[in-house]
Length: 350
Ligand code: 13P
Ligand code: SF4
Image (cartoon, rainbow, N blue to C red; front, side, top):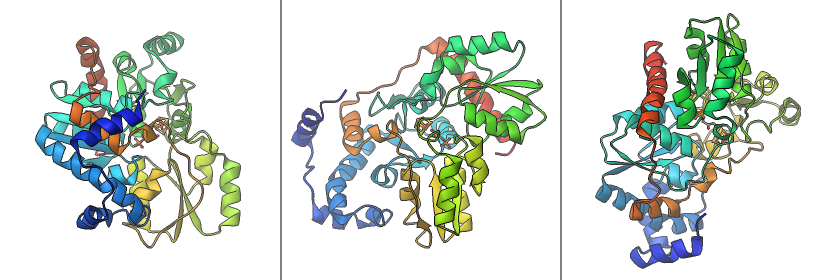
């Protein structure tokens, strides 16, 4: 748990973090990427942090990997690479920096560490967890193996290193159906997201997909009735859902895909009005790039992703605290599951 006033006081001794309209003006090229969703007054608060972080990154030879659910000032202000879970996992294998700062949740940082054990991986807030990752342990995987002998275990990357190590292969929301479809066995175990598994099961009807009962606290809140009512009140709105939503919600949507799949769909289609049935920052991060699209409707916030803030990123880089460690033996087993996913995705052209 952070003592935020103490953290701010410590940072202010080293960096000039006072709100600055002049600096905000100087850094307007960055602001232009988020001016539809961040007010000039807020940007004057963020700009000194963005400047300090970007300078410190160079000093530490660090890169920031930012997930699509980061807030716009992190996504556009300090991230060197942004993307969905699969893209960030692949990027972690490619970057040459000494330090990776993972702006996302803990399982993503663990994945980077597993793939790049010699790098320092920093997590700005260790409490940025995930309801899916917390829903299963390695013992849960073994229980599924006992229930379905011989069936391979495909685990979502939203899992701990321990669960990845106990699985045969990983998947993300952008490759889950193809990975499950490529398994040799008729029965395939998917953990831990029951809804992703149920959505995949419909896409690969030749497989008997069985699942663990985990769920995402952000996406499970949407109901098909919400979407029907929204469509009735807002005719012409394109509804776009993440596959962590229950299948009847996905049925009501016009498109379903990973966070990057959603961005690609909206960028290609440019609907007049769009409702993104996912985490709130998604629409904010693409609003300026797509001025012709009116992003409407409610969204749900991921409390874990929102633990990552500019001041915690600056603190992590300044003090080099929040280093993610994974037991080397477990990391090696987990790496096999993630690497199999990356290799198979490449083979399948995903
Ligand atoms: P993506 O792989 O689609 O980025 O999803 C990650 C996630 O946590 C969604 O809730
Ligand atoms: Fe986990 Fe859901 Fe948050 Fe993604 S949105 S990190 S799946 S709790």
